[in-house]
Image (cartoon, rainbow, N blue to C red; front, top):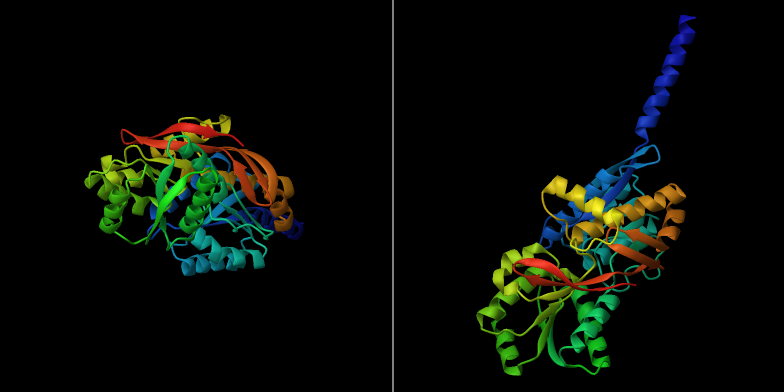
Length: 364
C-alpha cells in the first residue's frame, strides 16, 4: 500500500514538474548597445510592457530571452544563432535593416518565425516564409512624405546615409516619388553614420538655397546635422523618415530640432483603440513617462506573435502563414499584412517646444 502511494506521489510530482517545465520561450534580438542602442533599449521596454499585459498563451507562461544584436550584422547573426541553439522557434527583432538582412536568412533556414518591429528597408520579407513586420516599409513612408511636401515645397535637397541600407533605400524611394509629383531634387548629399562634421555639405546647401531638406538617416546623425545647420543660420525646413523618432534626437540637437517633421507609426497623444490606451497606462505606470513609437511597435510585434500562437498553436509554419497575411488591430493602429508587408497607419510628427506632436495621420 505504501509502495503504491509512493508511486502515485512520484507520478503526480512528475506531471507537476512537466507542466512547469513547459514555458513558452520567445527570443528577442535588439541593438541594446552600439550607435542605435537608444532605440533598442526603448523597444525592449515596449516588449516587457506588452509581456506584462499578456504573459500567457493558454496555460503556458511566456518567457522572454534577450540577445544583444548591437548595431552590427555579425553580432546580429551571433544573437539569432544563440537563440536557435536554445530551441527557440519564435523571435522578435531586429531594430535596423542592416541587421535584418544579416539575420533573416538564418532564421528562415531554421524555420524560425520572426516579427520585425522597426526595420523599414524594402525586400526584407519578400520571398520569405517565416518573417513579417508591423512597421511600414520605405515605399509607404516615402510616398506619404512626398505627397505632404509637394503641397508646400517644389525644390529640395536630399541627404542620405550611404553606410545604412535603410537610409539609401528610403532616399531613393523619396526622390522617385517626389520627382513623379513634378518636384525637383537639386542635389543628393552622401553622409556616413559616424560623420560628425557637416560643414562642407551645409556650405553647399546655403549656395543652393533649397526650399526644404529631406534627411533619410538615423536620429543621432540627423541631430548633429540639425545643430550645425542652425548654427550656420540656415532656417530651411527639414523633413525626415521614421529613424528620426527618438527623444535622443531632441536631447542632442536641443532647440535646433524645432520644426522637424518626420514620418512615424505611432503617437501616444492620439491612441487608436482601447489596447493602445491600456498599453500607454501600463507603460506610464512602469516607466513614469509616455511610450513612443519604438516601444509601441515592439509591443505590437510581441502582441502579433502572441495572437498567432493563440490561433495556430506552436507550429511555426502555421503561425508564420497567419502572421504574413492578416489584419491586426494593434497598439499602433490598424495593420493590414499582406505577404509579410504592413499596410498601416502613418503619422506625421513635428518637434515643437521640445516635444513630438502629431500634425497629420494617414489611415490604410
